Image 1 (cartoon, one colour):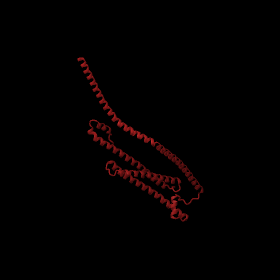
Image 2 (spheres, rainbow, N blue to C red):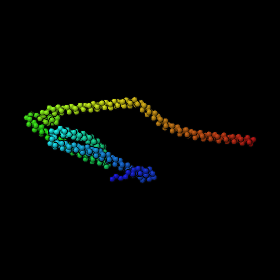
Image 3 (tube, one colour):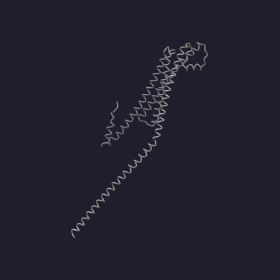
Image 4 (cartoon, rainbow, N blue to C red):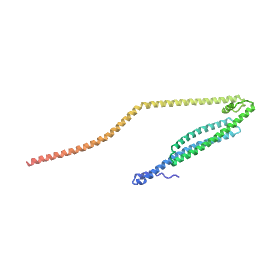
Length: 291
């Protein structure tokens, strides 16, 4: 259970009369809040990576279930599902590798630290890396099992057909997922070729759309570069006038201060002159009255 966040209250007390008492407490609360934020970010990243690792484990279990089906080697749908699971596992594995590299860089950056977030980051990195290595070993083991079984079936079929196939040809047959040597159905081959052709055409159309979108994005960046280049002079002019205005404001304050002082001195001189004139006029008037 988390404690109540009293940072705002302590800041208020620190700005008041009891600043000397609560200043250190406020600083400690700031450090505590920062560490909590950093720890939450670490756990969020670890949770995201463990979710990907769970997906890899799920795909490995799916591969084993599909391969355990008695009709796997004659059912194209099951084979396509297994290939999809392998592709998804590879994509997820790339994500986990990228996230682990980022986390490794963070761990190396805080190698000299020994606070709670640094220790948690090192521990979670090691644990997550071990989990990913175990999931990867299970996935590779499942792939090796499928491949060994396919190789065994291929050798059995070669023996039945009395064919002479080298190891390289056998390897190429495995790579092409063609382990069925008893294929006499021309219609099935034609339908499969047509399906592959449709898939290739669909991918070609998708790549064409992606290429057009990339061209539009490139044109937008080119226009943006031209706009930035054309507005650079205006930006430099605005910066120059802003600096000049800052200097004028600084000098203007000094001039206003000097003007205020000069005005005060002139007022004093004016009052002294008025006093002198009044005194002189009074003396003249007194002399006239006496005479």
